[in-house]
Image (cartoon, rainbow, N blue to C red; front, side):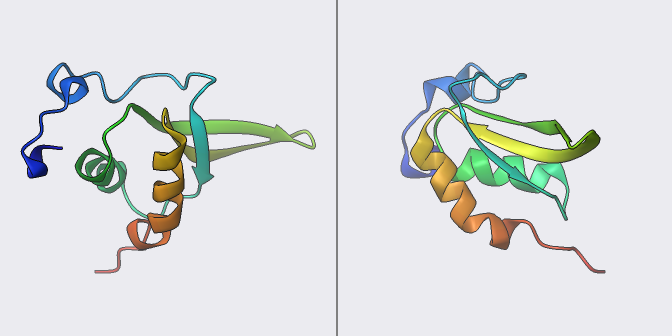
Length: 94
């Protein structure tokens, strides 16, 4: 991470965020209460591996629903994100 004076090659070449969710990524599904930039900024500054962030569509009992999905190549990063999700995903009241 750059804040520790270490350059991440994936970040230099713009390869950290992927546009599709590969099957080997560990997924975290959740509803959002804030905007996408809050999540991606936190991921870029606290984690080092590749990730996916986007919409996730489900069909349960013939009922379609959409949630957000953050998926990580390293399972430990998915666990860390899950633990701090409550502090990142807050309703913004002005």
